[in-house]
Length: 229
Image (cartoon, rainbow, N blue to C red):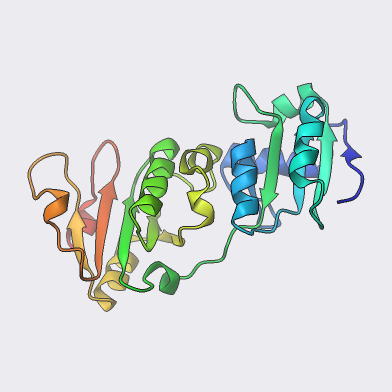
C-alpha cells in the first residue's frame, strides 16, 4: 500500500460517489459495495475479495493502517472525522469503510450441490434481510434468491446485519416471482412457504432433496405469486 491520501472536501468525486451509494443502498458506479465497520473490512479481506479503496477517519487512521498497511493494491484515503461522519450511515461510526468488489454469482452457484435455497419475497427491513443471510450461511444454505421489491442486499444495514455472510453466500437479485418459480421448477426443488402459524415444523421438512424456503415480507408474508410455486 502506498502512502495514505488525504481528502478534505466532501465534493471529492470518490466521496460523492460513496455517499450516493450509501444513501441509495446500491453499488457504486464502478460496481463496488460500501462496507462500513472494521468487522466488514476484516470479513471482506478474509473472504479474499478485492478491496481497492479504504476510507478512514483521521482519528482511527493508525488502526486502519494496521489492517491494510501490508496489502498491495489498496488505496487508503484519510478524511477529517467530521467529514467521515457526514458520509457514514451509522450514528456511532467506527471511522472506516471499504469499497469492496463483491463476488459475481449466477443461479447455478445458488443451486450448487444439494440445493438448499432461501427465497426473500418482499422483505422490507434491511436488518431482517441481512440477519437471514447470516443465518442461512450458518445452517448451510447453498444460496439465496433475492426477489424484486425486497430490501437491497447492498443497503448498509443489510451488509452490517449479514456480518460478512453476503461476501460468501451465493445470491442472485432482481428476479420476479415467475422467474424464481421457473428456476425452482427446472431444478425440481420442493418449495416450503413460511407462515407465522400452522403448517409443519421446520425439523419435519425433508431436506435430503433439493428444496427452497420462501420468506415473505414483514407485513403481508409470502406473496400470492410465490404461494403458487
